[in-house]
Amino acid sequence: MKKNLIKNISLITFLFLFISIFSRCVFAASISTDKPDYSPGEIVRITGTGFLPYKLIWMTIVTPSGYVLNDVSRTNYLGTFVYRYGPDLFSGTYYVTATDFKNSASTTFTDVVPAYSVFIVQPANNTAVPNSVRVRGYWNVTNPPGQVSDYNVQILWGDGTKNDTVNINRTASTSGSNPPEIRGTFDTQPISGCTAADNATDDCNLGNFNHTYTGCGPFVITVKLYHAEPPGNEAGDSQATVNISIASCQPTTTTTTTSTTIPTTTTSTSSTTTSTTIPTTTTSTTVSTTTSTTIPTTTTISTTTTIVCDEKWLENYKCVGDWLDMQWQRSSCYIVWENWQYCQYGCENITGKCRNNLPSDALQINYSDGGSYLKFSSYKLFNITYADNNVKITNNGSSIPIFLYVCGENFPGIVSFIPQIGTIFLGWKYLPVCDSSQPHYNGLDTTYPYSLGLNKGVTLYIPKIYYTQPWSQGTLHFEYDTV
Image (cartoon, rainbow, N blue to C red):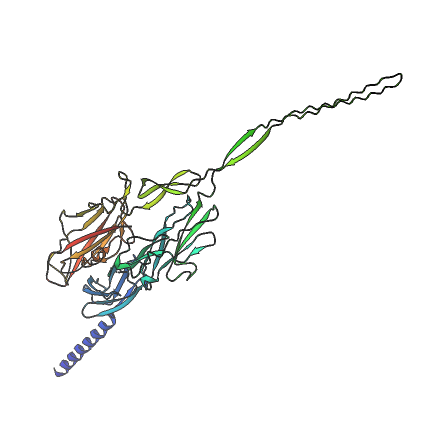
């Protein structure tokens, strides 16, 4: 009996050790991502293996900004799971941890890819322009390296000359924007509207850098965006071009021909010579007459008259889309319509002026259940719950495409959602807390890298909240601005 008891104890000990070793071998947890580095807009696919079967997995993701996201996933019968994450797109390293509260694993991934773009608004491509050429446009950089003040614009005029200095406005994205962005405008004329908060990084009033050509063209104007002082990298981080010719360098010539007849005098000259000889027997008389006649002639005098007018703007306006056009008088006295001012908030045909601000009713806000707020439940699993509705915001009044910003007030935790424009999903975004002292109330640009044209909308899809405080009802605040 004692011998059998010892055998049973030995068998139980062996089985316990075997199960312990087997568990350690089978459930050697690990997680990995499908790529080590991601571009803006990409979804991160996180795969976990070696966890306990049919268990909830607690996910923790720490962004480069220090923000901590907690979420849950679930394993299958093999102890594996797949979790998809829409990255904040802050440049830097993301730290990911997963645990079933017995097995844990961690990994990292990065997002450090900047994107540069520059656009010329004036002059338009393939146009004839007055010979004091103004160039202006806008630029932006996502995931920007360096400081705001590092960015500059260079203009190559296409006639062998260039400007390394132009007036430039630089605006950094608000804190927590997703992804981080620097955007601005440039102009060969001083830029109005630079806010006091931006003056530390703006060079809006350096002077007038309009260019005058000595020939008629055509010319190719190139604008280069630099993450440095030009010429820096001579290729530039991004560039744009337009083709132009000079409209006023070949005036029309009017020729008047005057025919003048100068009459002449006819002169008749008679010469008489008389010779008399008185011989004794013979008389001889000789008469000689000479006549000289000048034939009348016609003399033609040609004169050329060139009519030249002063080149100037005439005080006549009209709207062409979102441009306010003014009449321009060329040196040939020919009058044409030219782009005078781009209307940020649209052009009003009735008054022939730019609108001073955006239409007050430009946004239409619709909650999917017909309500007026996001309906989160107080019930939560691991402090997380999803809203029972979505919200769609439509550009209902601005003919100019808009950027849509959103922030939150009084939410009892961290709210996230996926912006959807048409069939495009932009990845998980986090709702910032409203701050009236910041541009756009510290709102998140929900439409980036796109914008909303007239009657186009964005849906804040699958809203969820990670509770950090007792439940309370929060509200959304919307702001918008033109492209």
